[in-house]
Length: 100
Image 1 (spheres, rainbow, N blue to C red):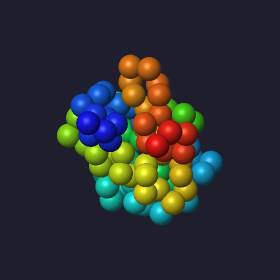
Image 2: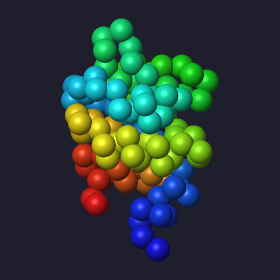
Image 3: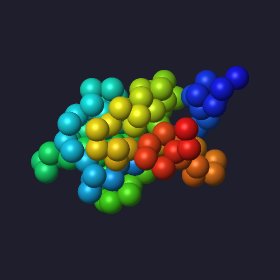
């Protein structure tokens, strides 16, 4: 079994580095329940209550049914600014610091 097929079963957290965000919007298309644009045109994460987290480095839990969408958003992000971490140990599983 590859790491890619194991990753969805693990609890994940995600954050966006707004300094690198290009405002392209792929993340919002992949998982609008997790990513949203603010007035500055940059993507931010939002929690399961829909609250947008505007503080730099804010992390939210990835809903189980959206794990693959969030991972795909991180992999396809043109700004390479989405960080998906295993909740258990903060190891990046998708994003610029992930070891593929």
